[in-house]
Image (cartoon, rainbow, N blue to C red):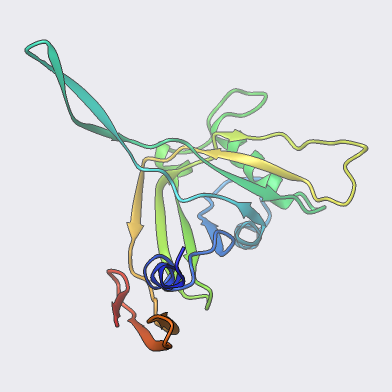
Length: 217
């Protein structure tokens, strides 16, 4: 590979340094449920305890239409797969207790009753935020009508030393609304190879904007 191709790669593929999967948080809107002493405090704790998540996949169905012995495939309806997060457990079990209380409010463990006033009472918006290397917001995705369906087990093991407990939460939702506004302002300089006689200096400058970065060379 020629050195000039590396510069072309840097100036086209990762102009801004590359988005980092570890720079994110998840904010959960907690419904009015019993058994949780401080909803605001627990919501803040989840923001810092949600150690793993994802940007939801986009999926549009396929409708095969028969025609003269062949099938023409056209776009169908949009569906969303259940979303999943991994949550850290502290010794107060606040995050675990929240999701257990949320689940219990939809279907009580002993009484088999739903204490929520309506369907919309337990379905809430959740927000996934992707940050840049300067803590600027790159993307936000709002999950509409989200609720905890499956609260995963917490594995206990005598051999599990030097680690913290976690559990998963499976989250169905009705829709995902992406917010594309983000800031990308940065200036990057790199040397473009011009051959054996030397190199020329090229500056790539970017400007911020809601619809994505723009660059000039």
